[in-house]
Amino acid sequence: MPENRIKDKPYGTYSIYSALKAGLCVACPRCGGMGLVTVQDGRYRFQCSRCGRGEDKVLCGFRYRVQNLCQSCGRFYNVPLYDRRQQTYPVLRVPCPYCGFVMPGRVERTGQSVWYGGDGMLRRGQDPIFGFDLWFRTGFDGKPVWALNREHLAYLIGYLSAGLREKPPANPGLRTQADMLPTFMKTAKHRERLVKKLQKLQQKY
Image: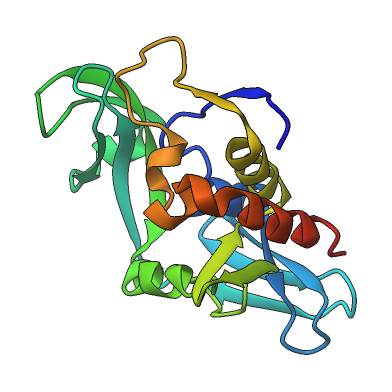
């Protein structure tokens, strides 16, 4: 592998939340082509780029929370907001539930019905909204390997193929995106084979 270096991304950079805003890549159940799942104003939308199939899902309710990475203790947290007045702010200062450090965080709104059991579907390589297979999905020694979209896929290839991996310079003690990866993906003896599999996924259109 080439001896290059990469500065890792902050923890949660490539999450289901960010992917839905940019476009979560999935396989169309009708034609097998690539489609995108996006969210806007409480409505999830699937649109296939090959056959044009479209599907919507309207949320039956919302939950609000501040999701952040604490600059003091380095832990990733979600603080639910139950006060309707707090839910109207785009950014809110809340204390970290682990160490009490107060910092501003963006108020996130998500649908309550989507996230019950959604993480399990994601681990199997399916999107947690419609249940469609992720477009960038493969297997490695019986374990699912996937990327949420093309940007996430490029990150995985860059991180695994790098000869030197560095923490973000601002605060090297904070958790990074690599902390979200399963152990088998970060094992040195697996990296070369994993990169080859991921590079094959880059060729999918």
